[in-house]
Length: 227
Image (cartoon, rainbow, N blue to C red):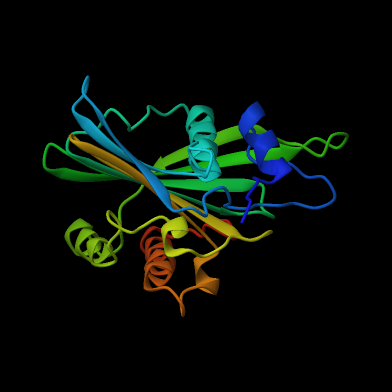
C-alpha cells in the first residue's frame, strides 16, 4: 500500500510548529506502516539509536514532531546518551492548546521528575498553532520513587515497540504519546496514537495507555485534558 504523510504533519515538520488547522484540528501519528526501525551505532558517542522509519527511510513524523517540541522547550537531545537513565513521555490531545512532557531521570543514584507544559495559540488568520509559552516544575510521584519506578518498568516503558511495528494504523483527531529512553549506551524512540482505542487488540497499546494513566495519577495532571 502506498503511504504518504498527511499535509498537515508535513507543514508541522517543515516549520517547527506543533499542529496546523485547515478546516479542523488534525493530529495523526502516521508515516511508518512498514515497521522499519533504524539501529545505528554512533561511534563518536558509542550510543546505539533506535528510531522508527517510514517507507522512504525517513524518521517517522512523530519523531520529527518530538524534535520540534524539544527545540521549543529548550531541551538537549538525548541521542548522545544520558548518564544513567532518562525517560521522556510526551503527550497531548489534538484539540488542546497545551502539550505535556514528563521527564524522569536517574542521576547520581537519585530519581528526579520534571513536568513541562508547552502552551500554544492559534493565529486567527492562518489557523496555524504557534508556540506561546513554557511552564516547568519539579514533581515527585505520590507513591514514592521506588514504588513508582518499579510499576513503570512493569509496564515495559523502556522496551515497548513503536505502534508501526504492531501494524496498527493511526487516525485523525485523538491523543498522541511519544516516548524517548536514553542511557549512556542507547537511545530509542516510540509513539502511539490513541492507545485506549487499541488496548483490547494489542497488549503493547494497553501498556502505553496504562503508562499514561499511571503517570497522570502519580503526578496529578492529565495529558488529554489539562491540569
